[in-house]
Image (cartoon, rainbow, N blue to C red):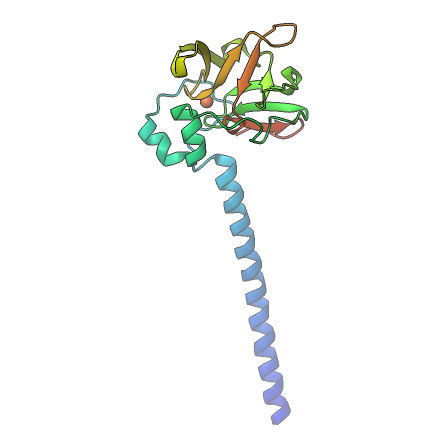
Length: 188
Ligand code: FE
C-alpha cells in the first residue's frame, strides 16, 4: 500500500515536471523573442529606419519622449559632446554610420580619418543628400552646422581642414551616430 502511494506521488511529480519544464522553456523563449522584437522593430522609437528615406516632421516634444536625454540634448538642442569622449572618436572598424535618431545613412568607415580634434571625423558623407548644412553663428564663431537630412537633428559641424580628396572635415558627435559593422543586417 505504502509503495503504491509512493509510486502515485512520484508519478504526480513526474507529470507536474512534464508540464512545468516546457512551460518554463516557452516563457523564456517568448521573453527572448519579445526583447529581440522590441529592439529590432524600434518599438521605442517608431521613426527609426535604416531603409525608409522619407523626411520626418517630428516635434521636439515628441522626440523628448522617445530619445535618451543625452542624445536629445545633442541632437535636438545642439549640445556638443566633450572632445575625446564618446564611442567613435578613436575607432575605425569597417562599417556604416547611421543617424542615431532616425536611422538615416550618414557615413561609411572608408571616409573616416584619424583626427586630432577628439571627435569622429569624416571627409565625405555616404550620400550627397544624407546631410544638410546651415550657417551657425553661435558662440561668436562662424561655423557650418551639419544636420541629418531625414530628421533635422544636429550631428556636428563641417570644416575646410580635412584630408584629400575633399579637404572637408565632418566633425561629428559620437552620440549622434549609430555604427553597424560590415556584414551585419541593416533591415530595420
Ligand atoms: Fe536623422
